[in-house]
Image (cartoon, rainbow, N blue to C red):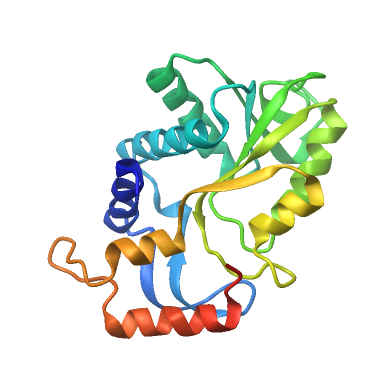
Length: 224
């Protein structure tokens, strides 16, 4: 596993963004783990988060794109932090773009924040986590309505590796439906492999009991 992935797993734990226990998801599933990217709230956290996203984007898509699009609302700070990190780490200037939930009809009018979109722009979409793929259903038509753009792919922080609306994972369903790749900084399998019975600080976050709950969850909802 790449060193930045190990660091990112520790970063999620340190930031209390990744938690283990019992959580009811929006889908109604009862999950033994939960990831909430809204927990990144400080300048230091957002700077580091942008760097991890930048490294994962570079690994999966290179730098051959023009715009990083972050769907409202959580995607807005993600796109800003990551464009800054790409500039700092790789010396490449890409534009950030996000959407408004409601179109503005005065001043800086329109549905987009940040950069506009132009025919031929190559776009990478950035999100926190994708469980069902519903957000892409909303995002895809927005992008295509603005210009004839090429969507290079989607990057999320954590691949939960569970069924989307069918039997395959949400990221696989996105690729089949829309034709572009979807990747994550880390997968839940990588998280489990790294933290299982490994003390971090003074705590073992995934012990035998927690691992058994995760295995049972994936026995019911796992897609990969």
